[in-house]
Image (cartoon, rainbow, N blue to C red; front, side):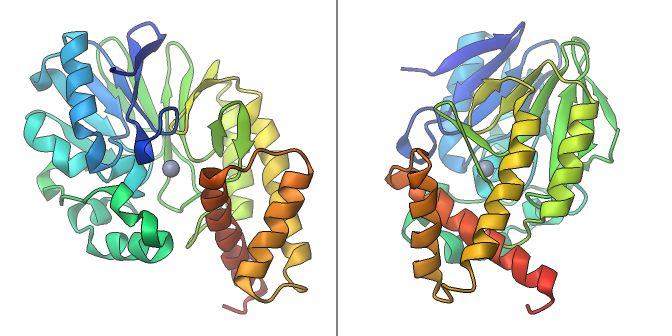
Amino acid sequence: MLGLTEVAPRVWVVDVDQFGRPGQGAVYVLGGDRAALVESGTSLARDRILAGLDALGIPRGAVAWIFVTHVHLDHAGGAGALLPHLPNATVVAHERGAKHLVDPGRLVASVAAATGDRFPLYGTAVPVPEDRVAIAADGERFDLGRFVIRAVDAPGHAPHHLCFFEEQNRLLFTGDAAGLYLTGHLFPATVPPSFDLDASLATLNRLADLQPKALLYTHFGSASPDLLARYAHLLSAWVERVARLLPAHPDEAALIRAVLAAFVGEGWPAGDHAREDLAMSVRGAVAYLRRREGTA
Ligand SMILES: [Zn+2]
């Protein structure tokens, strides 16, 4: 069954069944004479994306751009695997991320270290040829004919994060800058190595200034713009909680257990999969706190 839903006129979400589960990972398709993707998913998403384009009647040669919010593998890892099938597409990325698309070795090694057993679920990163990457500056506009997409610098989740703003319908593709929104719940996306609270909060303010009508989450789907403010509160509370529990739990595994126990105690859902994500976000918050203290 092809998970393909129109979220706005001529804008579709392809559910790429990330980590073998529906409703976790999105790739967006914008239709028109010049078509575009927002995100590529992992390399394991490739066939679903191509089948989605075929089902929509969008010729593969019509795809002009693949906008990736950042180079983490669940967002951009599959770009290199898609390019041979999309002969006219250029990958659009942040200037600090582009080199990792061309030479993904270091990135892949860090994901392998961070994800352990789950690593095979991230697919393989095929290098993107340098002449098929375009660097987007903050405010740069990409004219698709039917749509105009504006790149918005959005550091915080990672320093190389962009959001993409579709100007006519005021749709904001948030990547991970506004957290994860899964089954109606917001989750922190404060992953290692580079999460930065102050940068995230400043980014959330800038995104709110765009006055989007809808947020289009990579994880997952369309959501109310109110979530920008809600996420700012959640982020501050989350980092504060990790900071509070850290001194009494110098052992990482014990800290993660304590944070998750507090989280679940407040009625948050934390199934096995959410636990993995949250554990990673605890590690990223700790890395941020240590950086802030200047002890790491
Ligand atoms: Zn992600």
